[in-house]
Length: 257
Image (cartoon, rainbow, N blue to C red; front, side, top):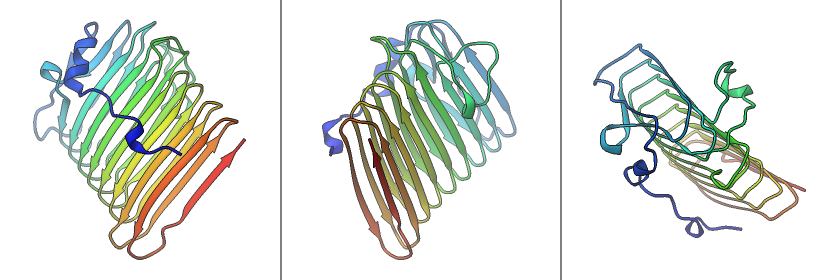
C-alpha cells in the first residue's frame, strides 16, 4: 500500500512555465462570456496553454465549448486551465497525431513527450474530458492535478501508454463524478479526495508496473460510490478512507493478476 505523503505533488504552474518556451498561447476570456466555441491545435515541441506570465488560462462564463489538442515529437505539453462558470464542456488531448482527430473516447495515437495538466473548476454541471498519451522515452510520463468546487460536474481523466503517471483530484461539492484510467508501463499513482454527497469515483489502473491509489471521501449526509480496479502482475495497493454520515456508501475493489 502507499500513503499520499510518499509522492509529492509537482511544481506550481508558474514554476513549470519556464520549461515551455516553444508554442505558447496566453488565454484569458472576458468575464461573463457565454456560448462560445474555441478550438486550439498545437504541434511541435513544448506546447503550452497558459495565462499571462505563466498563470492559469481563464474562462468565466456559461455554456462554452473548449477543445484543446497538443502534440510534439519529443517534448512535454502543458495546459493550465481555470474555469469559473456553469454548463461548460472542455476537451483536452495531450499527445496526438495531427489530422484526423477522433473523439477522446476512441483516441489511439502516439507521441514521445510527457504531459502536464493543471485544471481548476469553480461551478456546476461542467464536463472535463482529458487524455494524456505517448509512446515512451526519457521525456515520457503524465501528471494531472484537478480541483473542483461545485456540484454535478463530470470528470473523465485518462493517462495511457508509457512512463510514470500521477493523478490528483480534489473535489468539494455534491453529485460529482470522477472517472479515471491509468494504463501502460511505468508506476501508476492516484490521489483522489472528495467532500460532499452523492459523489462517484471509478478508478482503473492497468499495468504490470506498480499501482497505488489513495481515496478519501467525506459524506455529509447522502450517498457515495467508490470503485477501484487494479490489473497487472506486480505490486498493487489501495487505501480508502470514507466518512459516511447516512445513506449507502458502497466500495468495490478488484485486484487481478
